[in-house]
Amino acid sequence: MSQSGPPADAKQAQAAALAELENAQRRKRAIDTSLANLEASIWAFEGSYLDETAASGGNIIKGFDNYLKPPAQGNKKKPEPTDADRLFSSSSVTYQSSLSK
Image 1: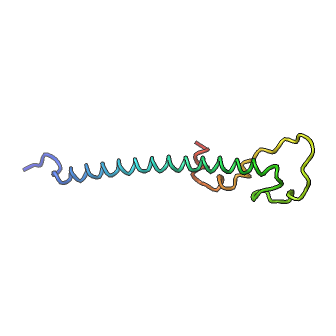
Image 2: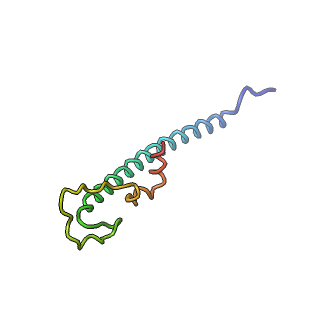
Image 3: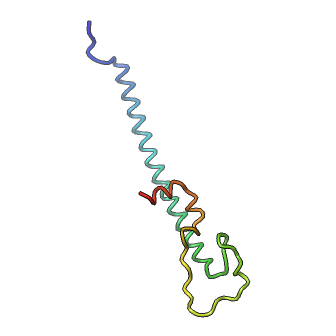
């Protein structure tokens, strides 16, 4: 006697495993999207903090050495935040890997 294929239990188990895999992949994509959005928000908030504190004499990243000094005279252009200033954004491994894609 020869069998014509796998038993019904095995087919059901395979179908259940495939459904579980597809569900897990959907959840992972949703989590990846949520993480990317959160990291973009952190990057934006970090940039606004660095921009707002650049003229005030200091911030938590650069220090407050210039806080007590009088403001510079003239139309001095405020410095743009560099990647080195972005302590929180640069600490995320997933954000750094998304930049290289």
